[in-house]
Length: 82
Image: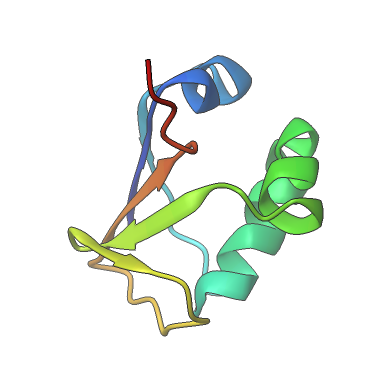
């Protein structure tokens, strides 16, 4: 699957996108666990505060939806106004 990171999330991952092929990722929760293991600094944002928005194939989700290896996943920080 292709993962895309936006705004300050890119600073934590040191990349704006990456391909991940891991059979342990099959839904949003398993993706979050994988990312927290790979990027421990994301843990507070993904799990504890749950502020990062996740989109699967251009559609936001707030549920523990199924993820397939062909999906494109995007992670967005909260939007701030100004």
